[in-house]
Length: 88
Image 1 (cartoon, one colour):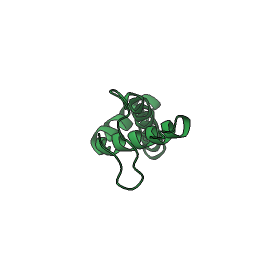
Image 2 (cartoon, one colour):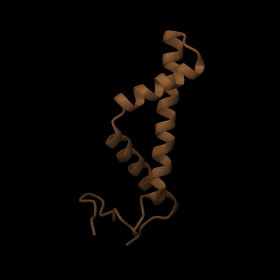
Image 3 (cartoon, one colour):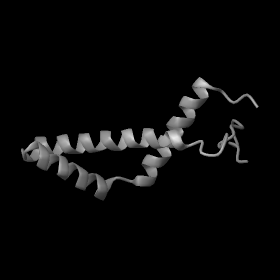
Image 4 (tube, helix red, strand yellow):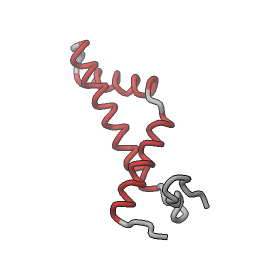
């Protein structure tokens, strides 16, 4: 069992704990694609569909997937600890 060296938080409370982080990661990814697509649309004045495809291509080329995963997991831990603190 892994624990934080500073606050003693248990990282894995049960098997499949980070399943909820996938939903957060999905939301972060969709948000990033929306921002990139809006930027492409504003700068290049392409049609919306073409701008969306351009945003997806930029996301796949530029998005640091491990960083999104880490951020999603951290947000999931914070949310879970706010709702159901681990007191052990």
